Length: 129
Image 1 (cartoon, rainbow, N blue to C red):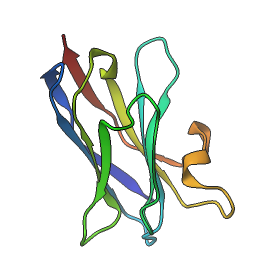
Image 2 (cartoon, rainbow, N blue to C red):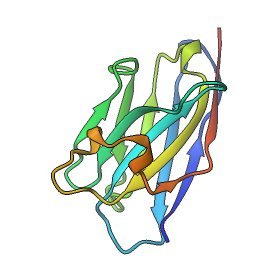
Image 3 (cartoon, one colour):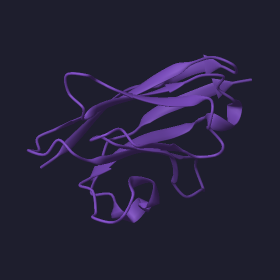
């Protein structure tokens, strides 16, 4: 059973930076589609960014493009980080790490929320104006 351990998040002022990290463990695979989703009360969980851990194909939602950046641990490709800079109040949300084995013929950035098999507990990002 794959487990996702999230870390990072916290409270910053608008314009500040945070790093979210997600480490996958418990599985035998090293190739996953991983993603960060975020959710605010009353709204559906939305995908912020996704990555293919083998080869590092990365994608970002338009709302965060140019401000959020993926990176991976060199030693363990299934530990990924999302660096968030120039944070805006609208970035405030609960952020959730998600993962699944890739689906042949389906790019990671095309995966929908319900297609992810593994989820972290969530970490809160607060951005004050």
